[in-house]
Length: 267
Ligand SMILES: NC(=O)c1ccc[n+]([C@@H]2O[C@H](COP(=O)([O-])OP(=O)(O)OC[C@H]3O[C@@H](n4cnc5c(N)ncnc54)[C@H](OP(=O)(O)O)[C@@H]3O)[C@@H](O)[C@H]2O)c1
Image (cartoon, rainbow, N blue to C red; front, side):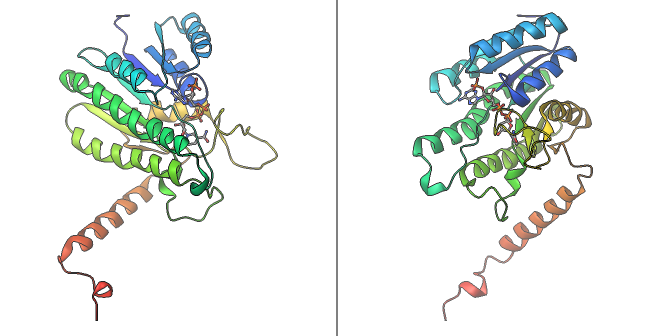
Protein backbone atom coordinates (compact mmCIF):
# COMPACT_ATOMS: atom_id res chain seq x y z
CA UNK A 1 0.00 0.00 0.00
CA UNK A 2 1.86 3.10 -1.16
CA UNK A 3 -0.10 6.14 -2.31
CA UNK A 4 0.46 9.89 -2.12
CA UNK A 5 -1.98 10.10 0.77
CA UNK A 6 -0.77 10.36 4.39
CA UNK A 7 -0.87 7.06 6.26
CA UNK A 8 -2.40 6.63 9.72
CA UNK A 9 -2.34 3.55 11.93
CA UNK A 10 -5.11 3.30 14.52
CA UNK A 11 -5.12 0.60 17.20
CA UNK A 12 -8.43 -0.53 18.63
CA UNK A 13 -10.18 0.37 15.38
CA UNK A 14 -12.76 -2.42 15.49
CA UNK A 15 -15.21 -0.38 17.60
CA UNK A 16 -15.85 2.84 19.50
CA UNK A 17 -13.39 5.73 19.34
CA UNK A 18 -10.92 3.88 17.10
CA UNK A 19 -13.54 3.00 14.48
CA UNK A 20 -14.94 6.55 14.51
CA UNK A 21 -11.44 7.98 14.17
CA UNK A 22 -10.58 5.65 11.28
CA UNK A 23 -13.72 6.80 9.46
CA UNK A 24 -12.95 10.43 10.16
CA UNK A 25 -9.31 10.18 9.05
CA UNK A 26 -10.40 8.42 5.87
CA UNK A 27 -12.87 11.22 5.10
CA UNK A 28 -9.95 13.63 5.62
CA UNK A 29 -7.90 11.73 3.02
CA UNK A 30 -5.72 9.35 5.02
CA UNK A 31 -4.85 5.83 4.01
CA UNK A 32 -5.21 3.56 7.00
CA UNK A 33 -3.84 0.58 8.84
CA UNK A 34 -6.51 -0.61 11.28
CA UNK A 35 -5.44 -2.82 14.18
CA UNK A 36 -7.45 -4.95 16.63
CA UNK A 37 -8.15 -8.63 17.39
CA UNK A 38 -11.57 -9.06 15.69
CA UNK A 39 -10.79 -9.61 12.02
CA UNK A 40 -14.41 -9.63 10.85
CA UNK A 41 -15.06 -6.23 12.44
CA UNK A 42 -11.92 -4.76 10.87
CA UNK A 43 -12.73 -6.23 7.43
CA UNK A 44 -16.27 -4.79 7.59
CA UNK A 45 -14.95 -1.37 8.59
CA UNK A 46 -12.27 -1.48 5.91
CA UNK A 47 -14.83 -2.37 3.23
CA UNK A 48 -17.14 0.42 4.31
CA UNK A 49 -14.34 3.00 4.41
CA UNK A 50 -12.95 1.96 1.02
CA UNK A 51 -16.35 2.35 -0.62
CA UNK A 52 -17.25 5.61 1.14
CA UNK A 53 -13.89 7.42 1.08
CA UNK A 54 -11.88 5.66 -1.65
CA UNK A 55 -8.74 5.45 0.47
CA UNK A 56 -6.57 2.37 0.97
CA UNK A 57 -7.22 0.40 4.16
CA UNK A 58 -5.00 -2.40 5.45
CA UNK A 59 -6.30 -4.75 8.12
CA UNK A 60 -3.72 -5.81 10.69
CA UNK A 61 -5.14 -8.35 13.12
CA UNK A 62 -3.14 -8.28 16.34
CA UNK A 63 -3.56 -8.86 20.05
CA UNK A 64 -1.41 -6.09 21.47
CA UNK A 65 -0.94 -8.02 24.72
CA UNK A 66 0.83 -10.82 22.80
CA UNK A 67 4.56 -10.31 22.22
CA UNK A 68 4.63 -11.75 18.70
CA UNK A 69 1.65 -9.66 17.57
CA UNK A 70 3.12 -6.53 19.13
CA UNK A 71 6.35 -7.14 17.23
CA UNK A 72 4.37 -7.34 13.95
CA UNK A 73 2.79 -3.96 14.69
CA UNK A 74 6.18 -2.48 15.60
CA UNK A 75 7.58 -3.77 12.33
CA UNK A 76 4.66 -2.25 10.41
CA UNK A 77 5.26 1.27 11.77
CA UNK A 78 9.07 1.21 11.68
CA UNK A 79 11.10 2.63 8.86
CA UNK A 80 11.38 5.87 7.00
CA UNK A 81 8.59 7.07 4.77
CA UNK A 82 6.07 4.87 6.48
CA UNK A 83 3.74 6.51 8.90
CA UNK A 84 2.31 10.02 9.30
CA UNK A 85 0.00 9.41 12.26
CA UNK A 86 0.02 6.75 14.97
CA UNK A 87 -2.98 6.51 17.28
CA UNK A 88 -2.53 4.27 20.32
CA UNK A 89 -6.17 3.78 21.28
CA UNK A 90 -6.79 0.08 21.99
CA UNK A 91 -7.83 -0.70 25.53
CA UNK A 92 -10.23 -2.24 28.02
CA UNK A 93 -11.31 -1.15 31.53
CA UNK A 94 -10.69 -4.08 33.92
CA UNK A 95 -12.33 -2.14 36.77
CA UNK A 96 -12.69 -3.70 40.19
CA UNK A 97 -11.08 -3.64 43.64
CA UNK A 98 -7.35 -4.08 43.21
CA UNK A 99 -7.04 -6.92 45.72
CA UNK A 100 -9.61 -8.88 43.73
CA UNK A 101 -8.23 -8.24 40.25
CA UNK A 102 -7.00 -11.33 38.42
CA UNK A 103 -3.22 -10.80 38.15
CA UNK A 104 -3.40 -11.79 34.48
CA UNK A 105 -5.98 -9.06 33.85
CA UNK A 106 -3.79 -6.54 35.68
CA UNK A 107 -0.85 -7.59 33.52
CA UNK A 108 -2.90 -7.24 30.32
CA UNK A 109 -4.07 -3.77 31.42
CA UNK A 110 -0.45 -2.69 31.68
CA UNK A 111 0.42 -4.44 28.42
CA UNK A 112 -2.35 -2.73 26.44
CA UNK A 113 -2.32 0.75 28.02
CA UNK A 114 1.39 1.13 28.78
CA UNK A 115 3.66 -1.34 27.04
CA UNK A 116 2.00 -1.43 23.62
CA UNK A 117 1.77 2.38 23.18
CA UNK A 118 5.35 2.73 24.44
CA UNK A 119 6.76 0.08 22.10
CA UNK A 120 4.80 1.11 19.00
CA UNK A 121 5.63 4.78 19.56
CA UNK A 122 9.32 3.90 19.96
CA UNK A 123 9.18 1.98 16.68
CA UNK A 124 7.36 4.75 14.78
CA UNK A 125 9.28 7.83 15.87
CA UNK A 126 12.63 7.35 14.09
CA UNK A 127 10.91 7.36 10.68
CA UNK A 128 8.83 10.40 11.56
CA UNK A 129 11.88 12.25 12.87
CA UNK A 130 13.86 11.39 9.74
CA UNK A 131 11.15 13.07 7.66
CA UNK A 132 10.61 15.91 10.12
CA UNK A 133 6.87 15.36 10.33
CA UNK A 134 4.28 13.11 11.89
CA UNK A 135 2.24 12.73 15.03
CA UNK A 136 1.58 10.26 17.82
CA UNK A 137 -1.73 10.34 19.67
CA UNK A 138 -2.22 8.38 22.86
CA UNK A 139 -5.78 7.90 24.02
CA UNK A 140 -5.69 8.07 27.83
CA UNK A 141 -8.63 9.13 30.00
CA UNK A 142 -9.73 11.87 32.40
CA UNK A 143 -9.20 9.15 35.02
CA UNK A 144 -5.46 9.77 34.55
CA UNK A 145 -6.07 12.84 36.72
CA UNK A 146 -8.18 11.01 39.29
CA UNK A 147 -5.54 9.51 41.60
CA UNK A 148 -6.41 11.28 44.90
CA UNK A 149 -10.08 11.87 44.11
CA UNK A 150 -13.08 10.18 45.70
CA UNK A 151 -15.30 9.46 42.72
CA UNK A 152 -17.79 6.81 41.75
CA UNK A 153 -15.29 4.54 40.01
CA UNK A 154 -13.60 3.15 43.09
CA UNK A 155 -11.90 0.09 41.57
CA UNK A 156 -9.75 1.86 39.03
CA UNK A 157 -6.21 1.74 40.47
CA UNK A 158 -4.60 -0.25 37.65
CA UNK A 159 -6.56 1.36 34.81
CA UNK A 160 -6.15 4.93 36.09
CA UNK A 161 -2.50 4.32 36.94
CA UNK A 162 -1.86 3.00 33.44
CA UNK A 163 -3.64 5.97 31.87
CA UNK A 164 -1.64 8.38 34.03
CA UNK A 165 1.49 6.82 32.53
CA UNK A 166 0.19 7.79 29.10
CA UNK A 167 -0.46 11.36 30.24
CA UNK A 168 3.00 11.93 31.76
CA UNK A 169 4.75 9.97 29.01
CA UNK A 170 3.12 12.01 26.26
CA UNK A 171 3.66 15.37 27.96
CA UNK A 172 7.34 14.62 28.53
CA UNK A 173 7.73 13.19 25.02
CA UNK A 174 6.14 16.30 23.51
CA UNK A 175 8.86 18.30 25.25
CA UNK A 176 11.55 16.05 23.75
CA UNK A 177 10.02 16.40 20.28
CA UNK A 178 9.68 20.20 20.34
CA UNK A 179 11.13 21.73 17.18
CA UNK A 180 11.35 18.43 15.29
CA UNK A 181 8.10 18.77 13.34
CA UNK A 182 6.78 15.65 15.07
CA UNK A 183 3.86 16.07 17.49
CA UNK A 184 2.79 14.07 20.51
CA UNK A 185 -0.72 14.52 21.89
CA UNK A 186 -2.62 12.73 24.62
CA UNK A 187 -6.41 12.67 24.57
CA UNK A 188 -8.35 12.57 27.87
CA UNK A 189 -11.95 11.61 27.15
CA UNK A 190 -14.57 11.43 29.87
CA UNK A 191 -17.42 8.95 29.45
CA UNK A 192 -17.81 7.89 25.83
CA UNK A 193 -20.43 5.77 24.10
CA UNK A 194 -18.64 2.66 22.83
CA UNK A 195 -18.33 -1.02 23.72
CA UNK A 196 -16.04 -0.10 26.62
CA UNK A 197 -18.71 0.05 29.35
CA UNK A 198 -21.79 -0.43 27.17
CA UNK A 199 -23.58 2.69 28.43
CA UNK A 200 -25.63 4.53 25.84
CA UNK A 201 -26.07 8.27 25.53
CA UNK A 202 -29.33 9.51 27.02
CA UNK A 203 -29.75 6.30 29.05
CA UNK A 204 -31.51 6.04 32.42
CA UNK A 205 -28.13 6.27 34.21
CA UNK A 206 -28.23 10.06 33.66
CA UNK A 207 -24.46 10.23 33.03
CA UNK A 208 -23.10 12.76 30.53
CA UNK A 209 -21.71 10.65 27.69
CA UNK A 210 -19.96 11.84 24.54
CA UNK A 211 -20.16 10.13 21.15
CA UNK A 212 -17.09 8.38 19.75
CA UNK A 213 -17.42 10.60 16.68
CA UNK A 214 -17.03 13.73 18.81
CA UNK A 215 -13.90 12.30 20.46
CA UNK A 216 -12.53 11.54 16.98
CA UNK A 217 -13.24 15.11 15.93
CA UNK A 218 -11.51 16.49 19.04
CA UNK A 219 -8.42 14.42 18.21
CA UNK A 220 -8.28 15.68 14.61
CA UNK A 221 -8.87 19.33 15.56
CA UNK A 222 -6.65 19.10 18.66
CA UNK A 223 -3.75 17.99 16.45
CA UNK A 224 -4.39 20.92 14.11
CA UNK A 225 -4.37 23.26 17.12
CA UNK A 226 -1.03 21.82 18.23
CA UNK A 227 -2.42 20.69 21.60
CA UNK A 228 -0.37 18.37 23.79
CA UNK A 229 -3.32 17.55 26.03
CA UNK A 230 -6.68 17.26 24.28
CA UNK A 231 -9.77 17.15 26.51
CA UNK A 232 -12.79 16.72 24.23
CA UNK A 233 -15.38 18.25 26.57
CA UNK A 234 -13.26 21.02 28.11
CA UNK A 235 -13.78 24.51 26.64
CA UNK A 236 -10.93 26.13 28.54
CA UNK A 237 -7.58 24.34 28.86
CA UNK A 238 -6.11 26.95 31.23
CA UNK A 239 -6.56 24.68 34.32
CA UNK A 240 -3.70 22.65 32.82
CA UNK A 241 -1.47 25.74 33.03
CA UNK A 242 -2.42 26.08 36.70
CA UNK A 243 -1.72 22.37 37.24
CA UNK A 244 1.66 22.68 35.50
CA UNK A 245 2.58 25.65 37.71
CA UNK A 246 1.63 23.64 40.82
CA UNK A 247 3.69 20.68 39.62
CA UNK A 248 6.60 23.02 38.97
CA UNK A 249 6.31 24.49 42.47
CA UNK A 250 6.16 21.05 44.12
CA UNK A 251 9.18 19.84 42.15
CA UNK A 252 11.15 23.00 42.92
CA UNK A 253 10.34 22.92 46.64
CA UNK A 254 10.69 19.15 46.85
CA UNK A 255 14.20 19.31 45.43
CA UNK A 256 14.97 22.72 46.88
CA UNK A 257 17.12 22.27 49.94
CA UNK A 258 18.42 18.72 49.87
CA UNK A 259 17.44 18.63 53.56
CA UNK A 260 15.04 16.17 55.15
CA UNK A 261 11.68 17.80 55.79
CA UNK A 262 11.05 18.62 59.45
CA UNK A 263 8.25 16.07 59.91
CA UNK A 264 10.56 13.19 58.91
CA UNK A 265 13.32 14.10 61.36
CA UNK A 266 13.54 11.87 64.39
CA UNK A 267 13.54 13.62 67.73
N1 LIG B 1 -15.48 4.65 26.56
C1 LIG B 1 -15.05 5.46 27.53
O1 LIG B 1 -15.84 5.92 28.37
C2 LIG B 1 -13.60 5.86 27.57
C3 LIG B 1 -13.26 6.96 28.37
C4 LIG B 1 -11.92 7.34 28.43
C5 LIG B 1 -10.96 6.67 27.71
N2 LIG B 1 -11.33 5.59 26.94
C6 LIG B 1 -10.27 4.90 26.20
O2 LIG B 1 -10.57 4.95 24.83
C7 LIG B 1 -9.92 3.88 24.17
C8 LIG B 1 -10.90 3.23 23.19
O3 LIG B 1 -11.96 2.68 23.94
P1 LIG B 1 -13.48 2.70 23.44
O4 LIG B 1 -14.25 3.50 24.41
O5 LIG B 1 -13.56 3.05 22.01
O6 LIG B 1 -13.85 1.16 23.73
P2 LIG B 1 -14.22 -0.06 22.79
O7 LIG B 1 -15.38 0.26 21.92
O8 LIG B 1 -14.34 -1.22 23.72
O9 LIG B 1 -12.93 -0.22 21.87
C9 LIG B 1 -11.74 -0.79 22.36
C10 LIG B 1 -10.89 -1.21 21.18
O10 LIG B 1 -9.67 -1.77 21.68
C11 LIG B 1 -9.45 -3.01 21.03
N3 LIG B 1 -8.68 -3.90 21.89
C12 LIG B 1 -9.00 -4.30 23.17
N4 LIG B 1 -8.09 -5.18 23.61
C13 LIG B 1 -7.18 -5.36 22.60
C14 LIG B 1 -6.02 -6.15 22.45
N5 LIG B 1 -5.59 -6.98 23.43
N6 LIG B 1 -5.32 -6.06 21.29
C15 LIG B 1 -5.73 -5.25 20.31
N7 LIG B 1 -6.84 -4.48 20.38
C16 LIG B 1 -7.55 -4.53 21.52
C17 LIG B 1 -10.84 -3.55 20.74
O11 LIG B 1 -10.82 -4.43 19.63
P3 LIG B 1 -10.84 -6.04 19.67
O12 LIG B 1 -11.74 -6.43 20.80
O13 LIG B 1 -11.35 -6.40 18.32
O14 LIG B 1 -9.41 -6.43 19.88
C18 LIG B 1 -11.55 -2.27 20.33
O15 LIG B 1 -11.32 -1.99 18.98
C19 LIG B 1 -9.41 2.93 25.26
O16 LIG B 1 -8.01 3.08 25.41
C20 LIG B 1 -10.13 3.42 26.51
O17 LIG B 1 -9.37 3.16 27.67
C21 LIG B 1 -12.62 5.18 26.84
